[in-house]
Length: 188
Length: 226
View (tube, rainbow over the protein chains, first blue to last red):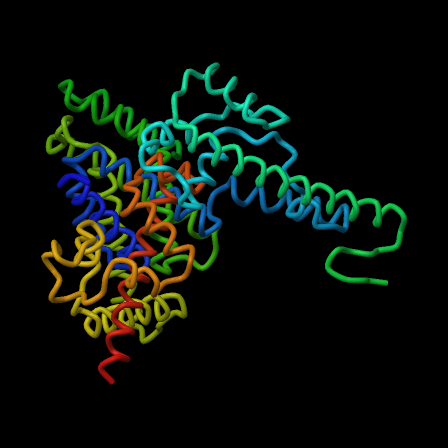
């Protein structure tokens, strides 16, 4: 972080704290500081949007919650919250998991940051050849170690999703057959 | 924006003599949504509205007043500065005036509404906490996290733990975001992409993690001393 970024980080810190504590004086001071720093101003706008979402104040958040409630009432299920993600995994999602697991080789950190923003779906069968082909198509050069970790992470994430899908299918089947049996217990 | 305000605004814009003023009008148009969001958030977090509907109505009213005041003071607007921050500053001042008026009126009439009582209690509690916990500020904590190693740390005399010891004081979610931000140096879009959230949400989460880290550190220091 350079000095400007540190100053911004501290300003955001003060802003969020001031919002949480109801300190209007401090909020006004930070806004004054942001008049000469458009990047800080943008960060404040984004922080406001995040807090608005967090507090459930947005029309969007409200509508989503309402639609979810209606669907749950209609189907008498928690299908919306439990539905496993059926979309194919993307490069960005796997890269994000690698980062969260703190599994990125140091030498590949720069290229890894680029991958975070890729929404390209992964091939269905993930062997080393498929990964190499994908890397060459995307013109990305990273170490063998990186691609090995990438593949392993993707496979683990795929297994996780597969299990969730199977569990959901079992649940749906049970509901259809009217047994009312759920994964969390036997509801008779 | 209501019809009256639009009329007043267009009259004022027509009267505007120079480019500077037209730029302000344009900036107001562009910032309207983010201003409304910001004002609504402040009203809600200050405990000045009892329901979302009330918060929305009050926010709209304050936004209107903000725009009128901004246009009246157009000569002090500097186009090179960030318009949103300038306008939001006016809005925050309006909220402050409203809160002060309300508190005064309540004191005079002897009525303290639940909302204001709650909001004042929050502020008082917050101030007490800050007074008690002022040995290490959140800004100190950021400095420490940036420099990380104890040897290079200019506030070493204040924080007696290593980076790893320090982040082990908070839960795994907070610890993860602190490591991503200060060890892996991820920020903005990169941090948000890793956490699979928006940039704003990532920054807010990071800020809260730093606050909790500071509290956890001060608590651990206090219990060690006792």
